[in-house]
Image (cartoon, rainbow, N blue to C red; front, top):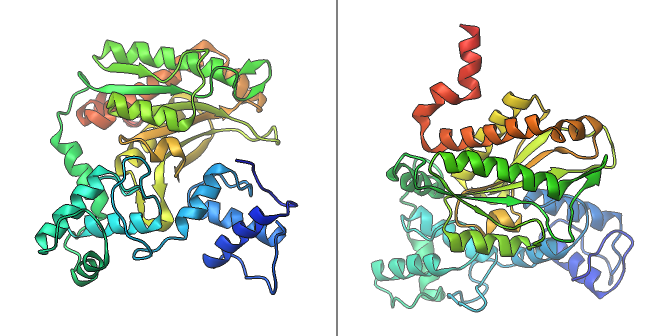
Length: 373
């Protein structure tokens, strides 16, 4: 679909303004308005910020889709599982959250009505004496509003995620990790200072792969040098491979050449109190290890709802390893020794996630403590 930005006019802009007005982010005009003006630009940026999207003031495919999802409230429509075209929206996310709070397991709270959400809905219906048809209609809604929250002591989704994680075998051998070098094919990503993002990240993925294979980890790559995939296709591949982790490798760019530093992203939406607790934990470990081993500027970890993070069923992170438009970051990532240090950092972060007892021997934080004693 086309993108819309400040200065555009037309029916599509009028629809965008209507969605923003319904969300309380933009005053409804006294008459009709189809102008993407400064007020509309501010409202779009506010919406993007609150929903974990890239904040650029541009309504592209993902922002438009998220705006459409945000207009639904639980009870606005009948909800049921559809293989061909699943229901997606804020009403589904609210249903998932309510099911989680009552002790049922709809899977990740992502606003997508999939088979696990349907199974949890059927469980609820059986427990309250309703027909177990997997459809959230008026009677099921009454039951949802009547029943009290039963899961306490923390975010319900996080409690379930940690419970499954701690019940698993704490070892690296037999785990599977999917490495996703960004871009590929004709899409070369950022190109600056004589360097190409897609080539650098392909090389980094190979260095990580070699180290992981040596520990008994099964490694998958989303692409080769000539293959280009959408984020949706990468997520589908990760889910089909049933990987335990997904690590997406990128570099950033900025018009200001002074912009520099590394940031790591995980699935989450602070406004809706939903996300991957393990993804957040893994992102913090990756960020800590890379900072400690390279000295790159710490641009911290951030919750995002990008397709690659949202649609994967396993903890997933995206690493933006510096700014290729920054001369210092570019010079550093161009060095093989630097990419080796980053590969080592990511492998140690994986070890710390799955085998915490290794932390005392391998983690950067442990090395710092040892140096001080």
